[in-house]
Image (cartoon, rainbow, N blue to C red):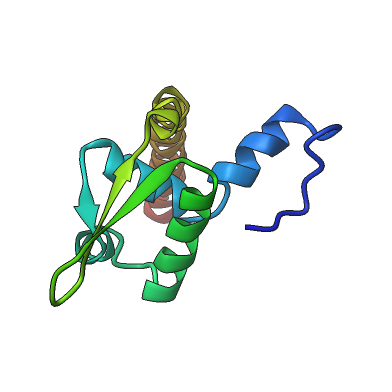
Length: 125
């Protein structure tokens, strides 16, 4: 896919984000890390994403060599997506993102519970 990224002078983080950036790409890659999936399975696993968006993101991931697409010659046609060896190299990156997200969510929940506790104390007084 065409990207607005300069491969010669661009930042390395920008290069990573050009491949896995987007709301659904990291989620799709995480699902594929556990094994081959058909489109319908990916659709069920990402219920908030539209079919069109899943399709577009899968195409970009395939174009970047992160996933592979295998079409079976049968009627009706069956298509499976799988992570490539290159795509598997993203696993530590995604695990770090998952860990950071878990910590962030816990922090936000703690903050919300503190605010809720303070507001309940104020109501009692």
